[in-house]
Length: 381
Image 1: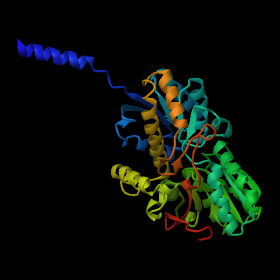
Image 2 (image 1 turned 120 degrees about the vertical axis):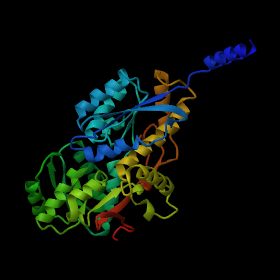
Image 3 (image 1 turned 180 degrees about the vertical axis):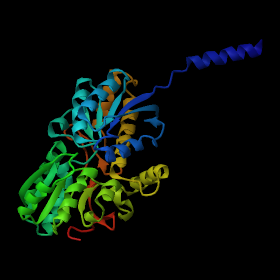
Image 4 (image 1 turned 30 degrees about the vertical axis):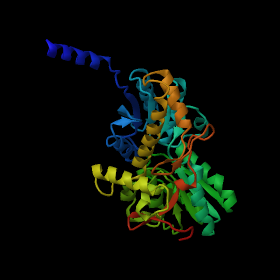
């Protein structure tokens, strides 16, 4: 009788315990389509993350938009309306990430974009962006050009919002560096030839060329420039920092320069660099799952999104429960209050007027040497 009483008491006590609240996160990447070389590593990171977020159990619902903005919008709406997620993360291409911002605003669900977003979307109070703004990163390019006495620059980039963002970032820094942009040529992500555009670029007689592509399609202009005998410096942007880009471009990419987050050359950084420790920890985690040398800038962006979300969920839990509009609002507010969160790409400090939150600590300049990325230690190294 006494044992039955103890058992009944234990059952009642267990039933009286509050259920642990689960946080639901909807992740959208372009794991197929023309942006797959970026989308796959973005997605991979979420398979090796801790099983908690802000101290709460977390469920990541990971979907593929096939690098298509229309698909991204449909998936974002499904995640919020049907799956009741508390947070959207994605997507991995600028057009898709930007398209999702409208859903985030309409359904009042915070979004951490894994790609930079346009100027209008950047003002959306529900949207936060992990990758460095193009203006910040192209500033590093302009500084190096100035040191090399580059005056005339030709541009060739995607004919979409990413190509526009890179060019805008270049223009924002060009005048102060004494640079004139003498050509603006565009190509589509799925194009297999840019011969015509490169002929015009070379004909403009530039001192240097800037390529506004991303992923493996970003290698095509430099490969074609080399075929045409162009010998000047070629600069890229932070959208091409992965092994697939190097594999596709091969020897034609030797000497190419690009800005990126410090994580890509973490071992080459001085110990005083604020992100070195986090970058090395991420590298160990990611390469432990996917193999040596698999670290890339895009998988690291996803890790930084996790770090920001982890801190924000911890704060939001003090005000509301997951699965409610109040929690989504509290999560949005907590993201905006992010202070000194050290990631792999930079140190994040958000505010009501800055939803990217990074500064010059979030960029280094790298150069392709013997098929790998090497830190450029000085502006004209």
